[in-house]
Image (cartoon, rainbow, N blue to C red; front, side):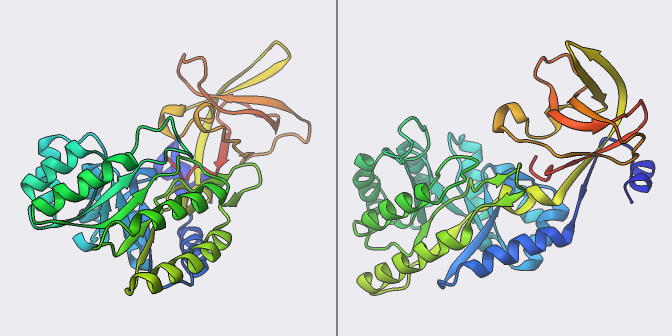
Length: 341
């Protein structure tokens, strides 16, 4: 009951539906019939320890975007071998921590690789590959022209390159970019004799308007055919890794807020609440349409409203142009699709 939760814990309050997360994870996991496929939850999307423990209990691995994600994952009980790190611009202290934690590293640059090899000679590493055609403006990953140099550097240090990783951008809604990324990884895998894993990364989106997740079934069908052919050609089984974040948790989160004030201006009603977009992903960043539901309905007469945060930042809108019945100070609102922070 949202009222009792708000009274007990105060507002603003994030509330998560554990069963919704389990259902989303199982649906994605079961969509990929190719074996072995490993699903690693992207902790950057929400590192709440309760969520991490829930997904670990379901059998998920963890994708870490920062050393802090690794710390949270280990604290939540993930074994080091179940954590894959793919970060960028690492400091020496970051690399020292990651090497000591003994998690798998996908390196983002020749410089990061060089310093990792100095600390972990003889270890296996992965490389994040830049998608030059799909995302030419992206800063992520090594250019294809740098991969041979990376392979030789690893070989000289007594290490192996065993994984290739890509990042297809955030909030992806269509399969085509991932299909193209997989084709690139398959082509490059032929150049690395020790490759045993292709990682399609994350960034899988969630449709906030229709409340639908990414079409994993379509991607899974492409991956199954492609990975089976590659494994047969190379004479060994290649593991597929995927790293969903938003797609697993967005729909499971509800943000409870209280109305602080209402006012009219330029023919629009502004509903001010006790939170801010600093507390979760801003619609200004991801174009997210938030479904807002009043817990206490006072009138059947509804009008277009902008729900705004309690800062003076001009774009601090929790939701815009949503239809709400009459509300007043003290009323409780529920904002759906708030599981991604």
